[in-house]
Image (cartoon, rainbow, N blue to C red; front, side, top):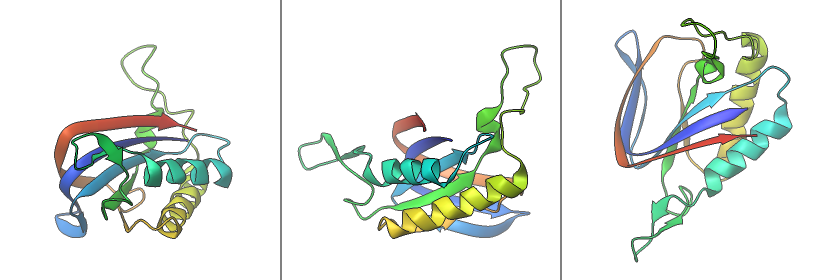
Length: 145
């Protein structure tokens, strides 16, 4: 399981030009599920999202988490995080989990993150989404469990 977290001032997600989710200050988290991943990895990833100290404190040091600053998370399913472009120009997605299992783990991760005390908005699993975000910093963290 892998995620890419980007600190944002705000972000909005739409499908077919219809608004779906919007957040203010917080994180946009692109979340990928690898073949064989389980709930344990989802929990580890979401605990990391909730606890990452990548927001500035009063001294200007990255010392606060999204939970500490009262931020939100926009969680977006992203199977392309497991695209392998090492050979040729067309990425292979054989490491990405089957959609049924990936969707279950995506929903599980969103619910677990909410239990960690972080407000969560979601994308639409499997949909072609448009995401507008205003990055802050920019700060981008990649994590794999």
